[in-house]
Image (cartoon, rainbow, N blue to C red; front, side, top):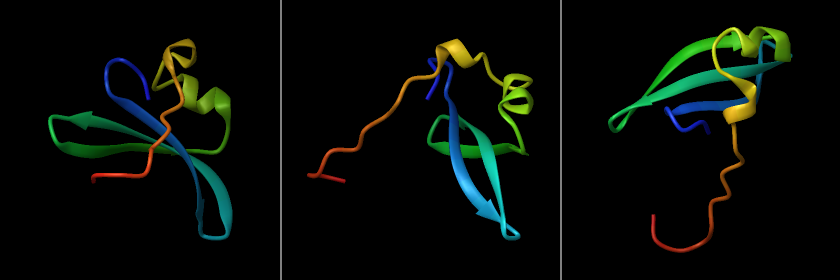
Length: 60
């Protein structure tokens, strides 16, 4: 997660691993791109701004 709302997560799409880049706008997560490399992710978000988000058990 970046300070400006970008979210990056690995996924399997059509039997291939991709890195999905999305961005939060208010309460909506909007898909931006499915990238095949970190270099492609870098086109959409500044990598140095990303931090890991750990979801703790409890209220949802």
